[in-house]
Length: 349
Image 1: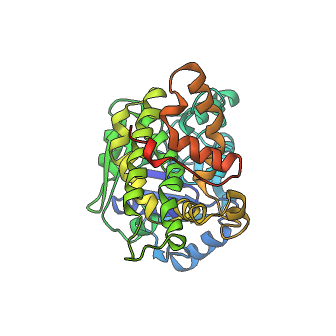
Image 2: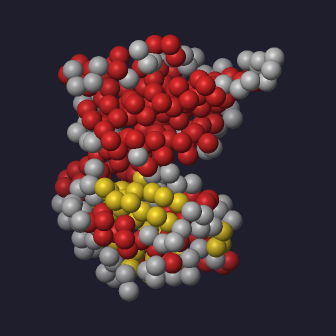
C-alpha cells in the first residue's frame, strides 16, 4: 500500500488527504504545534472542526510529538501543508525527522526572502537541506484553483502538480486523481510556484474595486465589474511576464496555475478581503490591525518579499518595473502603507 505523510493538519493539508485516502493510500496526518486541538478532534470524531467535514477512511491523525515515529517507517510521499509563515519551521521539522528520500510535495505557497531573484519554495527547501547535509528526494508542488472546503466534501476540483523531473509529476497526477479531484501535471515548477504565490498577491489589487463599491454607488446600481475585469487581465499578463523573467514558461500563467487559481482567490478568502478593505479606503496597517487582526494574509507577505526582487529585475533589465504596474502599485501600498492607486487607463497601452 502506498504510504503518505502529511505535515500540517490545517484545512488544505487535511482536505488533500481525501483523494489520497480514496485512492487507497495510507495517510499519516501529523499536526503542527498549532494543530493540537484539531488533531484531538479528528481522533475523537473523525471530523475536522474548521472544515466541518469527515477525514478519509485511511487517514490516521498524529500529534507533532509522533513525527519521528511516523517517519521511522518507510513512506512513498511527503506532503507539506503548513501556512506560508510556517515554511521554515516545516523545513526544520523534516530536517530533523525525515528518513529516506521520498518525493516531497508542497501545498504551502510563498516565495523566499531572496533579494536578487524570485525564489520559489522548493528551491529554498533544497538549499536548506543542503546546508544541513540532509539527503532528500525530488521536491515539487501542487497549485491551481482549489478551495479546501470544497475539496473536503469532494466537490469537482481541477489542480496541477509539478516536478522538475520528467515523468514524476505525471505519475503522481495519475496516482492521486479521483473522479472529483483532477490533477494535471507540469515540469514547469518555477511557473507553477510563482503563480501559486503571486496569485494571492494579485488578488489584493483585483478585489479592490468591490471594496470601493459601497463608497461609489451609481444611480442605476451599476457595479464595478468592468474595472475588476481590467485588473484581472492585467494581473494574468503580469504573472506571465514575471514567470518568464524568472526562467519559467509564461504559458503557465494562462492555465490552471495562474488564471484559474487567481479567479478562485478573488472570489473569497483573506487575500480578496484585504483587497476589498483597501478598496474601502483602509491602509494596509489599518486592515491588519482591525478587521484582519490575527489573520495570515499570504498576499501581504508576498508583497513584502517581492519588492527587492522586482527592483533587481528592473535594474538588470530582465523586467522593467513599468511593465508590471499593478504589481508595483500593490507593493507600494503595502510597503509604504499608503492608499492603493493604479492608473487603469495606462494598463493596456
